[in-house]
Image (cartoon, rainbow, N blue to C red; front, side, top):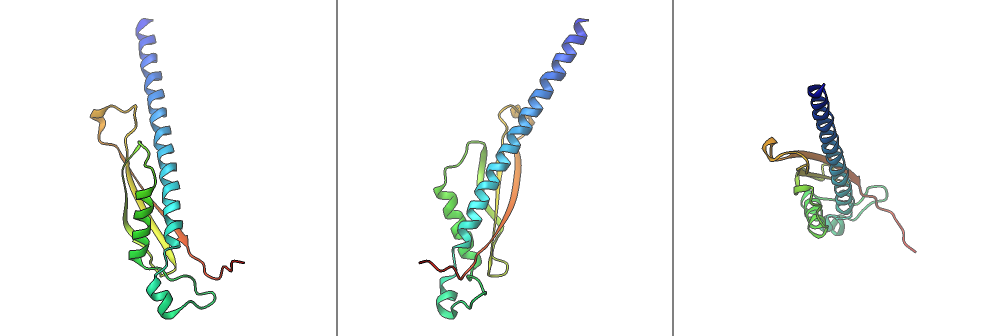
Length: 142
């Protein structure tokens, strides 16, 4: 009877640890999604000033964006945003930029190290994420 109780206790403990680690990974991914969405929205406002002032914007055309401006804006947002302890090495990675001059695409990557996973398992799980935000022109402020 004792071996059966011990085996059941080990199985239940393993299930609780796996469930807690999966929950932590999901919460870290959700936070990474939130940061990436904020960075993409911020980058969508980073218009290509040279193109804007040189050629202007036609109604319905959209605000011109460039790759360097989107990357710069996303990196600046990450630098001024407090980083959570569960996301290690949070960084802007490729293919961050503007594929069509109207859309800001920001890709963030981070390593997540669940607190309940033993050190001998590995260095963490890499969670890549890509979020797209579209800039709009034509907003008239009173």
